Image 1 (spheres, rainbow, N blue to C red):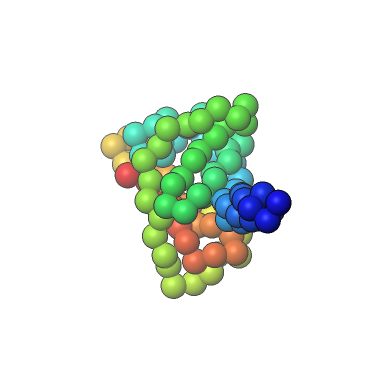
Image 2: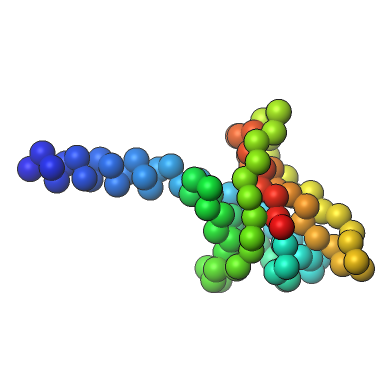
Length: 104
């Protein structure tokens, strides 16, 4: 019985540690080498792993890394840049944290 409660408690902590953030893409742009269409996206951060999903819940493959900044982001922020004739996500700052996701 104690083992079962411990397993349930650990599972709850693991699920609570995965943070989810939403952002909207208004123009076609790239996240790393992946092309994103306009729409709503969800970014799930699970430790060092970044999972991107479109509005339909489909996984969107994108290579990214988590970096720590100096200031906390009040809102989820998307920074874009123009490169090689297309708009690209440079990074996404995560609300309530100093973390940002940098796409490669």
